[in-house]
Image 1 (tube, rainbow, N blue to C red):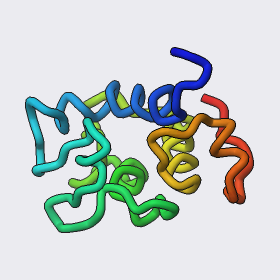
Image 2: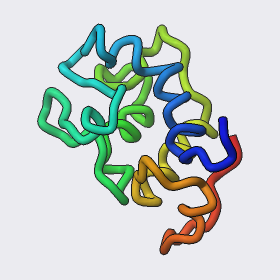
Image 3: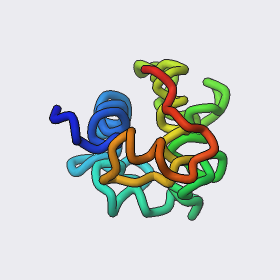
Length: 122
């Protein structure tokens, strides 16, 4: 990946690709949710909750569903599937808090008005 690649492309998209896009991508959309494009991430889930609320990870289904107990029907990914690490979940949280920008590099995000200056390490 080029040094100037976006934080989303380098850090967030690989997490989504590993844990989410098989069930929420172009070919399959469980719960009518797609996570494979910027446009799709701007949508809502089957309960009309936003998938992504810029600046607020707790209101973003993308992040909050990963924090639910494993036995919760809305926990994602499903318990029998591989789960993202705590560090990967923190990267998604940081990206959302930082404005969920799809184009900015990590350095550009760190220079923004983000209260957390640096992304967590993967």
